[in-house]
Image (cartoon, rainbow, N blue to C red):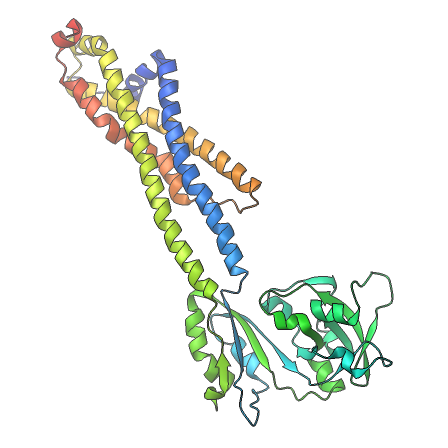
Amino acid sequence: MSRLGPRDLLGVGLIGIRTRKMRALLSALGISIGIATMVVVTGIPASSQADLLRTLSALGTNTLQAAPVDRDPPVTLPEGAPAMVARIGPVLTASAVANTHTVIRRNDRTDAQDGLGLTVLASKSNLLTTLKGTVRTGRFLDATSERLPMVVLGSVAATRLGFSDLPAGTTKPQVMIGDQWFTVIGILHSVALNPDIDRAVLIGWNAAQTLLHFDGHPTVIYLQAQEDYIEAVRAVLPATVDPQHPSDVRVTAPSDALAAKRATQTSFSALFLGLAAVALLVGGIGVANTMVISVLERRAEIGLRRALGAHRGQIRAQFLTEAVVLSALGGIGGTLLGITATTGYAWSQNWPVVIPAAATLAGLGGAALIGAVAGAYPAMRAARLMPSEALSGT
């Protein structure tokens, strides 16, 4: 009894596809639609989720603040606390501000009450990075400007002092802090993570010590940490900030947005699995239906092959190969179609484009698998046909 090699088996399995091209095309198209649906119903929610998580992350899901507790007499934090916080393993960046308890005025001719409600803060140069803030006009403090009489205004402070823009190429305006003139080098956008910065006038840490006799003790320490370790960082933060008096340190709780973000990730993961399972089931039913009809249409061909010596295993392998090839072709086409549709929709919504790896693997490899499963029954049915029964058409 002759045996079919892999190449011969593939050639026999492609007979039905080559001889009935339109039927094969429509069958593959049906499978493609099922696979494309799977990619789309997982890719679009994944892209939407990525956009939602990005929005939640902007709310400070990985940020914490440490400040002295309210007590009389007032509590001060150690000067080296920001540097100690930065050494905590999961901490990505740490910065600080300190109230200089000085008064700001538009100029030396205005009343000292003009700056009422605005706070003059000494600031580390990495504050903007830590708070995810942005400069509206001008620039922020850097290694050079933090030592010089230069300031950056929060959005509200700039409005109160009468500044709306800092045109390039023009002389920068000045403000008076205490009895010292300071040049305005930047104005910030509103800082969503900390509205207090909007009402602040920021001076370089070293400049505040030199020009305003600031004592170097931070008022508030800000940090960003890896989200998975945010609770662990919070637990060790008081002892890190002030090892001698950890009870004097007040630490904010993690943002409620972090809990929302984690709940969103869990919910979307379950949704992806459910949608993918439904789409794969629809694709498998389509393949099975196509192959059953193929067996019924090709009874005469099966009978002739059996009469010429083909055994049941070869008939079974022929139809199973055809089912797998049809599914694989449909899977490739459907995956490409689904990726294209998902990308186009995500771009139209200004979302990040996210194609889950599971969806791509299911489209390419899973299609062949469901083809084998769905084609198993039709293949066995074809193999059970007796030559006389198949040729007679009964």
